[in-house]
Length: 69
Image (cartoon, rainbow, N blue to C red; front, side, top):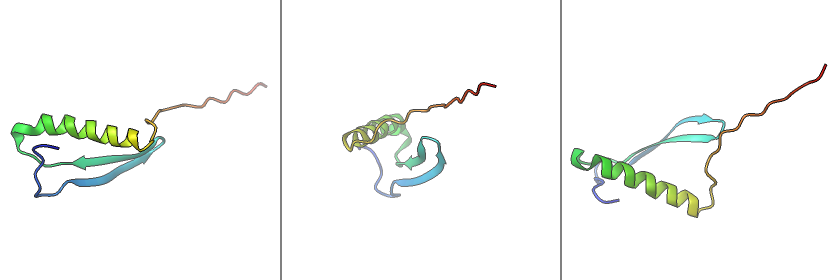
């Protein structure tokens, strides 16, 4: 991704686990002038990589169980 600094290196951490999977914190560092370009390019690249690897998009769901008395 253009304008991402080599130092410090990109950080990737798991923020939490929820019902649709882990939530990642991905921090590519850049100059403030390029923040939005790096932000949107990073999201696009991650989305494309996950899609091409066959990972389905997370979908929130809710199950309802109805009982009759």
